[in-house]
Amino acid sequence: MNGEIVFSYAGHYHDNLPNPHHSHRGAELVLVTAGSCETAFDNGVTLKGGPGTVLVTPPELAHQQSNSPECETFYAVMEMAGSEFSTELRTVETGNDALIRQWFANLLELNIPYSAEQGSALLAAIWARLTLLEQQSDNRRTLHPGVRAAVAHIEKHYMEPIAVSELAERSGVSQSHLNSLFRRSFGVGPLNYLTAVRMRQARLLLLNPYFNISEVAARTGFREANYFTRAFRLFHGVTPGEYRASPSETADRLQVYEPGGSPDGAAPPRRPGSNSIIACPPGRSVTLRRSDSPQEAARQRQAGPASGREPLPPRGGTRRRRRPDTLRRPALPLKNRSRPHCRPGRGRMPRGNSRSCCPGRCR
Image 1 (spheres, rainbow, N blue to C red):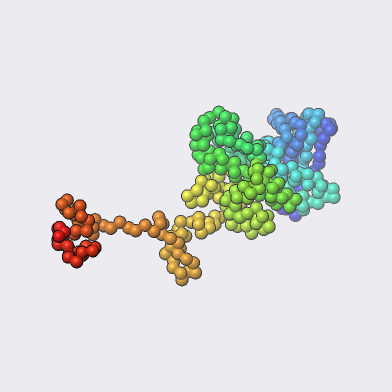
Image 2 (image 1 turned 135 degrees about the vertical axis):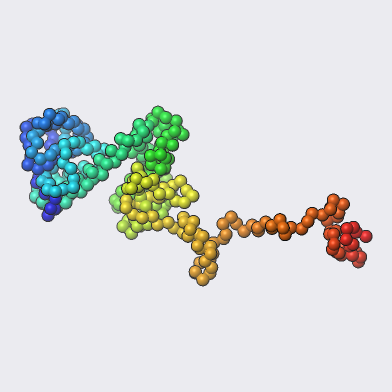
């Protein structure tokens, strides 16, 4: 059993049932899935929540919840000893995260019959997910208001056609300024950011065997499956079919940084000589292919047939080098330039004539 988090019980609230003034021995998480609610705590704090809001209540803090008629919530109570997760009174906006909603519903299933070990493991995953979403939300609060508006629109409408002009209009800035703001915040432009969001969703959909490639393309904003396949391969280095067949193996070849940059705060990596970001699971390393690495290409140019591969052509083509000025022939005198075959100091046999050419003029 999880030594830090112990699952106590879970429940589901709906139909505007009465909610008395109460407290819990352990910490409580409440996920609002519909309607709205307002919770008044005995310490004088009042928190409000709508769909996607998670209320975090510390142990032994009495409170009373008031709900709208259409309110629906899932809640879970747990005991936490020495946990790395904070039970400080607050709300966490999940943006209707699909995993959080599904996991709260799964906790309700684990409540009857009661499975403490599995429930505790699932609660640890929920807390880790909430921490990640909270960090992403904190990072977005520091963004330019125009970038926040554009990011919110992309996250909500990524499956629809989106142009930079539309994002700029919603952000209240010019297209060039919006492009500069995105590059300053994420290291890529708005369209590359949109591509990263679409590819993130595509990876999730490809794990579902009931969606074919065309359906995944349509659900991620691509009108044609062929174009989606080319874009996916350019972004990940593998085709959608290869990723679906063995996601655990092909993931090692990817470098995916979720929108917002790499885990260490650096800009997302890019292919050399390209504006496209390389996608990969967080914490993975970049593995560039032969054509992506200039150092590898230079090494292969120097390697001959002994390496088992044909050497690459020299950079810049096969054009001959220009001769140094010291090795060039001196220019002909002006009086001899009318006859190109005359060379001062040399004799030459003109075509069709048995007599030789004298230096300087022809006889």
